[in-house]
Length: 84
Image (cartoon, rainbow, N blue to C red; front, side, top):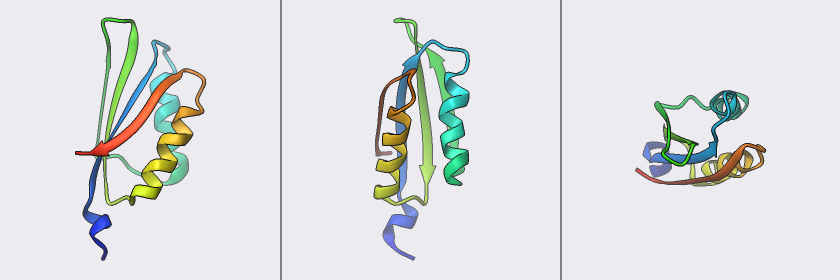
């Protein structure tokens, strides 16, 4: 196993306050066969939806691909990842 298989990442997504935004974000993980360890979603004071997704055992390249795909969703205004 490589060191990347033990990496722990945190993906942060900012989306419009849309009832379907969370489902559209999680659908991308389902489509790629990635099961998040934890998902936290909350409305911000600026009427946006803040989504935090914790993921383990995924390589950096795949995290970048996931963030890029999330950025293509019309209601998503920002998507990026970092080491947790």
